[in-house]
Image (cartoon, rainbow, N blue to C red; front, top):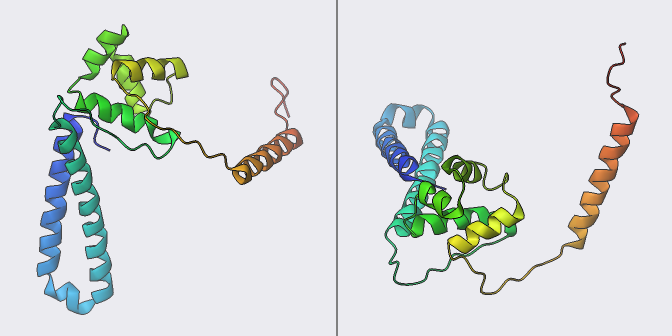
Length: 175
C-alpha cells in the first residue's frame, strides 16, 4: 500500500522500470528461442509485479483525487486491515501526518510510527482517537468467531509453553 507522496513517486518510477524491462524482454528473441520457459517465467514475474504496482498506484490516485464533499466507503476485510483503512482515510482527507498529529495533540513522529508499523505500536484507545479524528465509522460490523482457529492457537501456545519449560533460561547461571 502506498502511504505517502514519496512512496507514490517511487512506485511510479518502479512501474516505469518494470514496463521498460518487460519491453526489453519482449524484444529479446535470443532468450525467447534458447530458453522459452525461463523467458516466460521472467516475463510473468515482471508482469505480475507491474500489475500489482499499477493497482497500488491507481488506488492511491483514487484516494488523493476523491471528492471530499461526498463520503467514501472503504471495505475492511478484517480487524487486521483496519490500519490500512485509517491510513487511506487520512490520505483521502488530504491530511498530512503532521496535521493528524497536531489535531491529536501528539508529536508527528508518533503518527509516523503508527503508520510505519501499521498501528501495531498504538493502543486501542489511540486507534479510536485516530478513527474519530478521521471520521471513520463502521456502518455494519460482522464478526465471525472461528472456533477451529481458537483451538489451533491453544495448541500452539501449549506446545510453546512445554518447550519453554524443557529448556529454561536461568539468568546469571554459568555453564
